[in-house]
Length: 356
Ligand code: SAM
Ligand code: DTB
Ligand code: SF4
Image 1 (cartoon, helix red, strand yellow):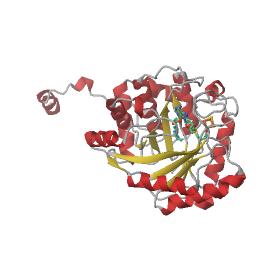
Image 2 (cartoon, protein in one colour):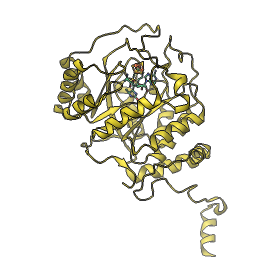
Image 3 (tube, protein in one colour):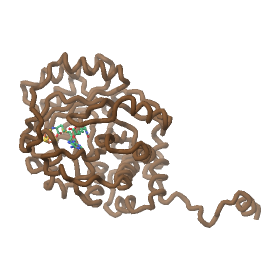
Image 4 (cartoon, protein in one colour):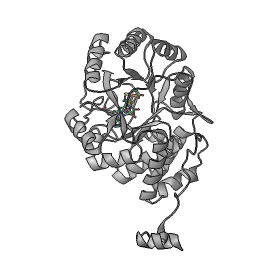
């Protein structure tokens, strides 16, 4: 047989050439919202090479595999938060040595946004250590959104829970993204946070979606959760009525003084598996390699990009913790041949729902 001779000539071991280990999740343009636990567990159980290959195939159906979106983060209101999230430096319940500050002035925020734009960020993310914003803060918050938009950047805010009215106000101001993480599985949630419920998070996400603001929602890996919790977290995200447009996967930044401060760093291969599963399950979403890059090798980060991560925070500060310096990231992009992704205009009314 001619094909066998050619294979032998090329030294291809035909007995070991396997088809794609399972069909990619997003054949054609159909997104799934009915992931079953066994299927997601099966993704995590795959041989690593098969999982990464499948994730990369899915990634290339929807994205340029060499483009990475850049966001910059600013803490616009730091510390003194009444919530008890066990990972957070900003909770008033823990002695973390962080001093609380008031909401920054609009001009201060916009000056920093201009710097971020100069440094190459296309999206500006503003975070506040609140359970929820107060109505008296809404004018300043809306002015921040409008100012960032005038700079030609995408705007993102993360302010805790929102009322219907507050969500509408932010949407009217032109907010592009709202970040609100589910953080972990529903089952593990109460081990990490007791001052609100998993359902509270879902309720705010539904309000944000309803108002036509893009949803940014993901979680933290390395909080002592089991793999089944990572499975549960990704299922909860992917089985929402519409996939979040942005899915941040944070590696825990351990903070002294918090209940999770002594957590052991998660194995990098397990972290990369989580990124790959997120990519396969939410193929059209931008998956952000979020907190934790400061503690990752360049090879570890490269594996995350290979697994389908295509967004990062740039700038040497996250909210209260460190992020790699600009020159370090510039070198990483050059080594890997990565290019910055251009900002996409907000596609209002076009969430990633079933049948897209
Ligand atoms: N207070 C608002 C809230 O909780 O939604 C907004 C700010 S909060 C700091 C935003 C997100 O940052 C959290 O949901 C969590 O996923 C992430 N985060 C906070 N501390 C972290 C840490 N030490 N390591 C990794 N991610 C962290
Ligand atoms: C997200 O998922 N990660 C960012 C952003 N959304 C708000 C926050 C990371 C915070 C890391 C710990 C800190 O700097 O305090
Ligand atoms: Fe407050 Fe947000 Fe930190 Fe929780 S994660 S303590 S809500 S700032």
